Image 1 (cartoon, rainbow, N blue to C red):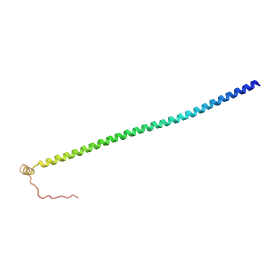
Image 2: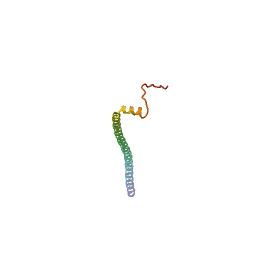
Image 3: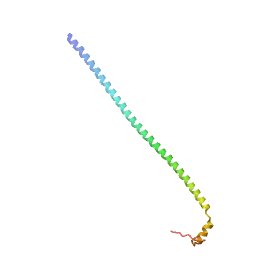
Image 4: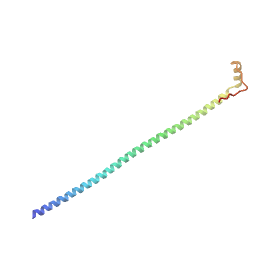
Length: 121
């Protein structure tokens, strides 16, 4: 009988150890699943961060390009204004009487007083 009680005690100890191992396994699987969740979350976070950085750099490049375009447009307008001023100064410097004399004498040209317009349909 003593041996039977001892075997029963050993069996109980083995069962309790087996239950402990099962609990440890369960805890390990729960922890590994939660670790997988954290890894998936971190992977999504990294992907989102990369996309955000890419978008931000694209917006910055577009902003720089638009600023450069605005500068070029303003420079173009300034140059057009300068050209118009030079044209006006050049037109003022021309003596129309000398142009008329040269046209009549050197080039044998006459001015047409009356201009008729031709209309095309």
